[in-house]
Amino acid sequence: MRLTGGRLQPLGCVLALSLMALVLWEIPGAWALDNGLAMTPTMGWLHWERFMCNTDCTEEPDSCISENLFMQMADLMDSDGWKEVGYEYLCIDDCWMAPQRDSKGRLQADPKRFPSGIRHLSNYVHSKGLKLGIYADVGKKTCAGYPGSLGHYDIDAETFADWGVDLLKFDGCHCDTVEQLADGYKHMSLSLNKTGRSIVYSCEWPLYMWPFKKPNYTEIRQYCNHWRNFGDIYDSWQSVKSILDWTSSNQRTVVSAAGPGGWNDPDMLVIGNFGLSWDQQITQMALWAIMAAPLFMSNDLRHISLQAKTLLQNKDVIAINQDPLGKQGYLLRKEDNIEVWERPLSKLAWAVAVVNLQEIGGPRSYTISLASLGQGVACNPACHITELLPVKTKLGFYEWTSFVKTRINPTGTVLLQLKNFTTETNGAKDLK
Ligand code: GLA
Image (tube, rainbow, N blue to C red; front, side, top):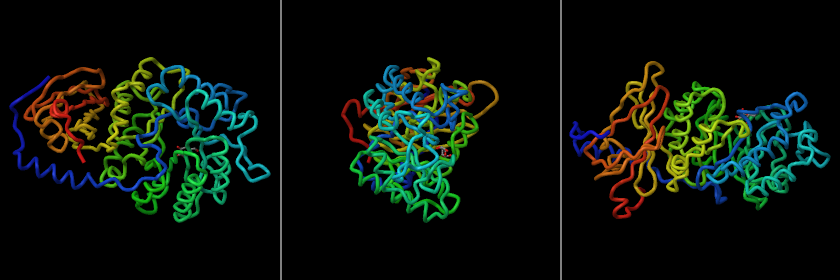
């Protein structure tokens, strides 16, 4: 529904605000890690949230961390449309290793759970047209207590490259000092580069840095393709909410760090599991798109509802996440338990997410002045608006002076896409 003729902010005020927003947010993208990877946020699957450190293949053969689990997921990523929409990296997390290095000092996979070895697994994954990710830790041990890479960065990078690994998630447990942490993350980045193999480098450097000092995101971006800032995601609304709250509270620091080649990582998608209601799953998908987040699902692709699968495979929402302009969105305003987030897209388009954080009552209406969106230019002079979530609906043509009305379920989100009318008619240039 469209409203017109309501009160507008005077034009001068809007322009001043827009200018301020440009100064605050449009800091030119700093150098990214120069490995040509992650030009859009990485997409794939990662075992941690759903399968954790389950090593008991006797009691739980179907859900223990083993080559069977990854081969089954590879089959499904290939056959069930996941690869087709962009989920490409199949990633192993902690607990894949044997408790000791081999006689040559190399990491080795647990021989019982990965009897064919990682090289074999990577061949298998590659044969499905997918890529393989692996996990290691910058310190003395991994978070779950397996061998760490401290003092072994070169040999571990070479081992991963020899095995045909395509992504490394490098955790930050068991470091003695922040200097050791920072040096280790940089060293591994250079070690990976030296192998000559294209390996996406996924860091947790800022997460482990924050308790001691404010991370230098310009530097982190020079070494990592993405980086975790905040604690681990759980399968709960409370957890998703805490990640959104952390991100909006720190957006002045983190948003400008994101861009092609380097992204803030708010952790895995838990859609398709047990803890989120349908509306909360929509919120996670919409907001991970707004945040230009790497999309790593952690779920069981063998047992997933059609509804969750359809949401995770929503091409329109994925296109927002993967938008080539590569600018992360941010919280525009919060009032009365409603949050409005927006993200600039290529071709002068914008994505807008309206989240209803009120956990009591029913759907609530919220009306937005279009002049207040997109730094005053999103819908100037006019735009086409499509609601992408919860249900794709063309809302139609709107003028800059008009209003759009949304109706949002408790803990749910309405995701809108605004396409500037001049873009469609004149092929306007991207916002710089
Ligand atoms: C840390 C990371 C998680 C996961 C576990 C594995 O907690 O943040 O994402 O990798 O370690 O032990």
